[in-house]
Amino acid sequence: MTVTPKSGAPTSGFPWLPIGTPLPGGAPLARLLDGGPAWQLCATAGSSRVALLLKPAAAPAWWADELTALSAALPRPLEDAGGHHCLVLPAAARPVTLPGLALRSPAVGRAEAEALGRALSALQARRPGAGWSSALFLPDPGFALATEEDPADDRRAALVAALSGGVRDGTLAAARIAEINPRLDPDTIGKLLAAAGSPSPRRAAPDASGFHLPGQPRLQALLRDRVLDVLHRPAAYARMGVPFPGGVLLAGPPGCGKSFAAGRIAAFLGWPLHEVQASGVGSMWLHETSRRMAEAFDDAAAEAPAVVLLEELDALGRSRSDGNAPTAEEVNTLLRLVEAAPSRNLLVIGTTNRPDAIDPALRRRGRFDLVETMDFPDEAGVADTLRALLQDRPHAPSLDVQRAARSLARRPVSDAVWVVNEAARLAVRGGHEMIDDLMLARAVQALT
Image 1 (tube, rainbow, N blue to C red):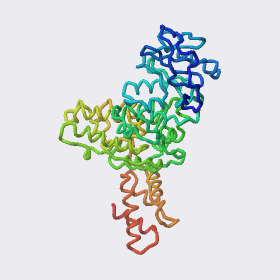
Image 2 (image 1 turned 90 degrees about the vertical axis):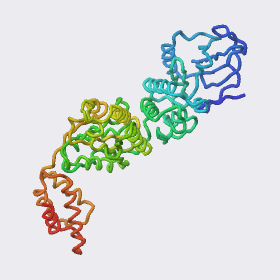
Image 3 (image 1 turned 180 degrees about the vertical axis):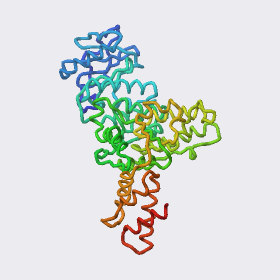
Image 4 (image 1 turned 180 degrees about the horizontal axis):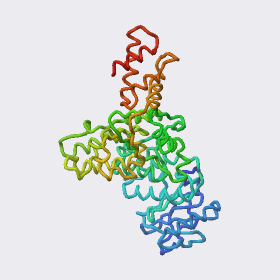
């Protein structure tokens, strides 16, 4: 018999020690169960225990540090068996590779999955270049032992296979994994994938310097620095422990451009935009609002990476001390969904006209990491907005945008959008090939 580990390096079909060799605790060594270049897992005769044999001489020099870390995690030191390190464990605590977990029945449950996530996160911190497919997971004490260096290993695919029961597809969203393995829920899966240093695969975000938010230069700079650059260079930020960006909360009067900004972010990233409004998820029936909110986030997660726009956040997550507030269950559900969103590759953008009405727990960092108050754009901001709106429409090269901007300064952004649309309509109606000064002036006059 030949045992071939995930690494592809076959091992002998027999234990390194003669069958019947007494092991620590007295049980004799029996047949080989699994193995790799420097480790073997063997059954014991007449007992429900297994023996893990470790051979440092067959491993690279760095493995000594791994064994030191393993020894520190164990309640007792590794023992000697015929010149090998040996650890005898109950069969229920049998060490296993991620491919082994993927093939095991029943599928991984929540407690074991969380222990695996913590173990892989610690492994990533100790040896960033270690392969996960070849690592050996010891459920007790919850330790992942690196056995090979393999920076090219598809870690997410290996972890998804372990969580799903064998589907080695790194593109699977957390919601889909939960459908395959109902012993786990999407939030738990999302947190495990992120905590273990294996974020969902995402389309590369463009260079943040290319993002423009006309009329809002301060917000543009903040979004470039705090959100878009992190998405553009995820590996560099991950090395420093910077996670997927938390939520963005935009406050300001109606029409100042909050939803417009969210749309510009989604369009720049090329991510789907999922809008969640109080009018769309609210229900008079008990638990129904919470269910609809969770369903909306699940729909977005199925298309992750994605942007979730929470319109009228003051209605969805009004302070629980307010007599007209939603139920505590609904606010708690929203808290949980927003907090878990980064682990599901969801960028949450909330908008509100009344930031003071939002529940304090929802406003805190960790849910919304960037909070910005917006106002109506000034003349220069409106001119910038008009140019952006006109960019993809035929218009006269010498169009006097500044004149229209003077009339629209300190007015809702929606007015500028309306004016450009009206100017385009007038141009078509008049048989013109492009928007000219006359059409733009007539549109401004029609608005005012």
